[in-house]
Image (cartoon, rainbow, N blue to C red; front, side, top):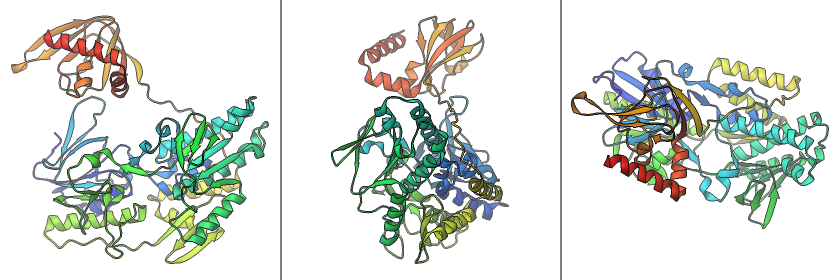
Length: 536
């Protein structure tokens, strides 16, 4: 249990997006010299992604690391936990997080809680989406998509099968909102700029398709700006399919609701978000899957808990309509929550949230954009300059502003880079070695993987009352251990130590659960093993 000083008040922020970061920054500014209050932020990464510029990673207009800002620089006095949030107990005011290098339970108490967890991609809306579509939500998605596009071009350049070539050179983007349009525009610009480096690919073979379920793209903007965006993208070769929905995905095709199958090896999905699983599990009142808050952004029924951003259902006090889950709203919501937490601490009046949207901007690639700012509409090069100027000013951190400005200048002067970064993903099956006397895992640790002995011997030791250790089993080659915590979702019931040099195969928790749930013979085998061990 993490609690350094019981007398200190702890403000706990969950989530490192715009809402969470700007809440922490506002609190830090007001409480910098107040040693009676500790601000803690939990986020799965140690950086904040500046989402409006994410699409430019596809074309390489901005270096990968320049779209992100280190949280420790933005909030230097905030205590940062780079962990996944695993559970939230509103009644007891405790949050549990994922383990670090040791699979040990980790909990944090709080006095005030801010929920800024955002949402997750909803892959359940159609079959095959999770398996075959490329999401576009975070930095890893952008890097993976860029590498995938370059890989498709590399393969197409040497591929003789014409059917496969067409699939490799057809790029489909599902979703005609800001994210989908910006991805399609950057993708289209990139492949047409670099195709000259591929001697066996003709520009006429490249096909970028944008699918949208509505009658026009960018429905958030006025109709004339949406139509302008459609026309300019079409002139640049983007095939825009309106009133067309994606209904399924396979490894080779995008299946549409108009009884058409588009052969492709690249399907980018900007699908609607679904409630975060942690939010869905909370006992508080919800509307459309989002947490209902009052005018002060407090969670209804929980006076010391606030929510904002994508995970909160906030009514605009001026229009009576739900606030959109956009960055400019999240930033103001964060500042409002920071003010109200200070008011709660000091017994002062709280401030209701109120904000009038300043404008909307959408980049269309190739030095063009559309914008509506303070009721005025702009398009073309001037809107593109506005887009860059406004977002450059909003980008947190002077160093990031300088780096991005330099990237944009170099992008005008230099050709695009076509280097494909080979990134490795965590393997579900791995090998590990332990020396005698080391600890494989300890009693009370969280179950994170299954171990299968290749070579060597281990002893299984259980600590009983009074700290007395009892050896309950010795295991050798071909035997496994660690399955009981995975099956029961309980802490480890014993400590395992190697008696000799030990080589093991390990299977991560997720892969084990998938096999256990879907292979009856494997489930029966492990259930028998568990039964024997419990009996012995």
